[in-house]
Amino acid sequence: MKIKLRNKMQTKSLKTCLNRYLVAVVILSGSLFAFNTAAQAQQVKNIVLVHGAFADGSGFQAVYKILTKKGYNVTVVQNPLTSLKDDVDAANRILDKQDGPTVLVGHSYGGTVITEAGNNSKVVALVYIAAFAPDKGENTIKWVQSAPPAPENGILPPDDKGFVYYDKAKFHGGFAADLSQSEADFMFASQGPTSVQCFVTPITEAAWKTKPSYGIVATEDKSIVPDVERTMYKRAGAKITEIKGSHVIFISQPEAVAKVIIDAANGVK
Image (cartoon, rainbow, N blue to C red):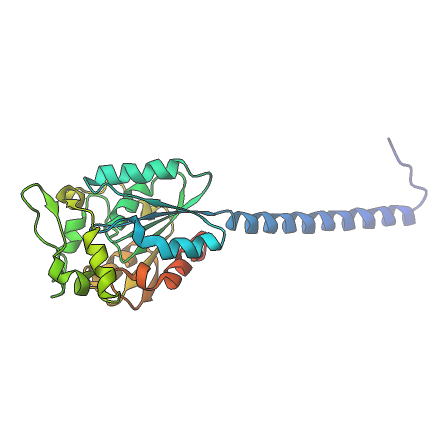
């Protein structure tokens, strides 16, 4: 349908209206884009937690409670600790069940696990808690041996069946110095025997090369030298947070650890 304009005034008026309409559309589109971007940033509600060697998933209880109270869907992987492949497979079984984007969190040797399992398409960010972050072709033992161990460190040589344990006499001071003796005793009693294969198997593809990562340095760590943690995190381009505490910082400082995980879920870099 053609509209016949009677004079220049009508033409000018129509052009003004059209310009205002276009400006409104642009503003509205920008607002919708900003809204959608913000909404997407809040859509990461899935957190998967991976424990390390000489431990099990129960240590994440306090972090789990904090995150679930804030509305996150949290799942704790129980590593078989029989080989790196078995542990990565265990993590992937949990990741495949997630209903959307997921933050993958690993403590200690669990950092090696998430470095490999983090290539899963569900994973959008990685959080390393006093953890190893090897590169492709590297294994955990390379980084264990990269600096002289603390005197309190109690990682024992493999036994005749190829499994590694933590020395009972050093467990409290070397692994969980900022927990009570009774808490450390329980952790020692419930530790998972760890196959040496977990430590000597190399990474095939490091997920931190393609996904944002966050690294927590436990400044009083006696099981992994804190400078080793810093070195790995810097290489990974991770956002680094230093928290005063032992190797099990996620048990002794759960609020501070949960905050880093939430930052990762919110896309803070």
